[in-house]
Length: 146
Image 1 (tube, helix red, strand yellow):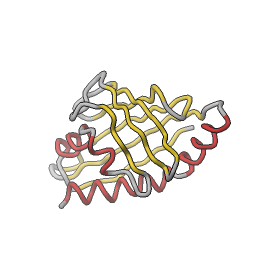
Image 2 (image 1 turned 30 degrees about the vertical axis):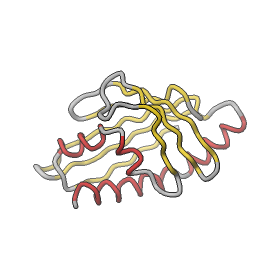
Image 3 (image 1 turned 180 degrees about the vertical axis):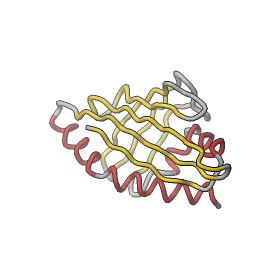
């Protein structure tokens, strides 16, 4: 399954890229009622780094480990190496449209788990991606344009 989302933010490409490279940004742009607790991750994510976290979706804890790959000045990939999906590959790309305007592009490749419980959780998460990315757009703009 594939999912694409993009939006523009009135901030420089460098500011947008730096914001997304900080491990703390993930929790900042995750919509309530989901709570993100980072167990381990460097402050700034680089090629080969891992981020170990739990997403609390109500009473359900979903443990996730992501590896950061293919880091460039305008993109990076986070690949789930442990979590609720068989595969989760999320490419973050940033395109300068003007000196102070950047397009954020998100591209996901997802395969649901064969485990019936995690397949149900993954299906719920898949169906809620539009809500997640709409909130991320709002919150990213709010944080970077303030």
